[in-house]
Amino acid sequence: MFCMVSFIRMKQTKIPDARAKLAASLPSTTEILRGSLLHRTIRHRSGCATCAQGDGHPVWVFTVTYPGGRTKQISLSAEQKTLVRQWLRNYRKLKDTLERICELNLQLLRPEKNR
Ligand SMILES: [Zn+2]
Image 1 (cartoon, protein in one colour):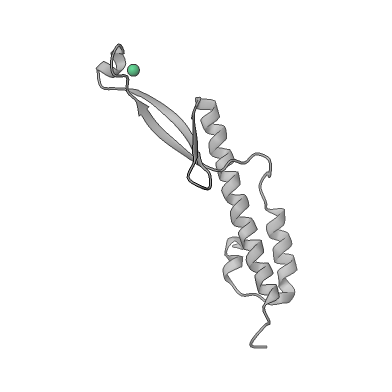
Image 2 (tube, helix red, strand yellow):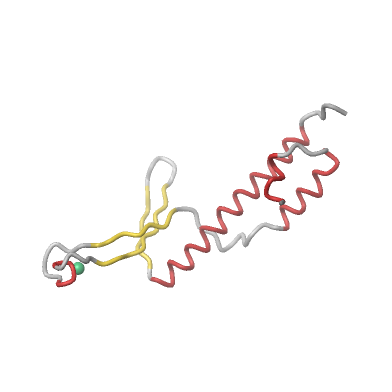
């Protein structure tokens, strides 16, 4: 499978093709989001029958951390949760694929041994 390509040292002449295939497999570069999706339960201290029974309210929360440790957090509707999940997946795939292309380029820079 193609996902293993970055871990196998290949002949340098094969790298441009491998790189092009990886680039062609990139997901959307616009529908992306960096961060995490968390499932939490909100519990009201008083005045809520649901929470009084111990059930609480399930909510989906998106969090993102910035360099320096600052974070942003927003709660999501059910439709947003589905969208956010897809955007997070796209972002991860995009990052992984770019990382593999970088690895191939690194191989191009290093002299080939055992010929
Ligand atoms: Zn409540």
